[in-house]
Length: 327
Image (cartoon, rainbow, N blue to C red; front, side, top):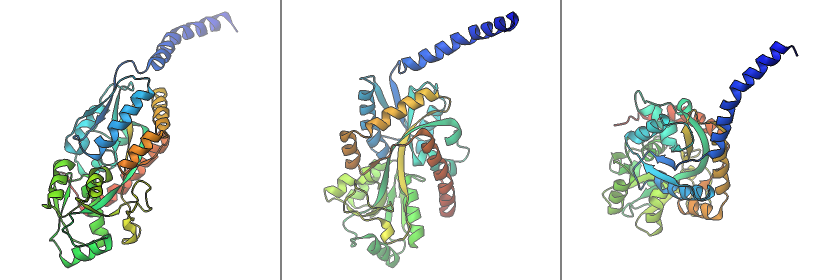
């Protein structure tokens, strides 16, 4: 090699090596401060109920390094999601990503300040879970087919609650009503907590909330579950038949996972993905997910990205048909 070329190559290597060394050192050192998982919803909902045990297990997988959950609700998850999209992309700030935040919000909030596919790096899908068609025991039906018949006989007389306009519980019930050809009265709340209280008290007659929200009250007999929104029976929900038995093809399943700011280094994303996929095989985690009505769903970051993209298109169509708009 000519002397000048060797000198140039050596100079370039000399310039590049410190940057490469700093990058490698940063990856090896992660995490260097507490890892924060932002749940962009108030405490008490399905996002919060699933995120907290996963955060605890992730902390254990990281040798006790702090992993904290921060609830930052507002605008159906938009406030917290925007904050995470703008956070430093170093793996220390993650978001508990939900079908609502990542696939629904772009179609119900005008001028949303983030793009699910542009502004986030999918890290790890954690769980899928059906919603449960749930009623107050005063409603004289025992299954989904009877509920549809009862609603048709009493159009506009049954009130159902949701966590808010555009929430998963709203969209799922809207899709159910559209498929069944029934008319219910929507009562939006600010979160699942107050909605659940009114449903238990009988001030509402129905809801189609995520399993973690309603399962405890179904199990103790205060509410009645009529069926769930997945196409196939779930091991986590024994005794609850798919609504598809009454409405062929009906399926609206919620999913949850972790995403990071878009420019988070791939090495950090891969490390978190491996840690999360590993803990999803843990017996305690599986038991906790089952308790909440959820099924573990380990996937690669790329497979998670494909899910987000396909669900965004699906809900664009569904929301357009239902005419759903946020407050």
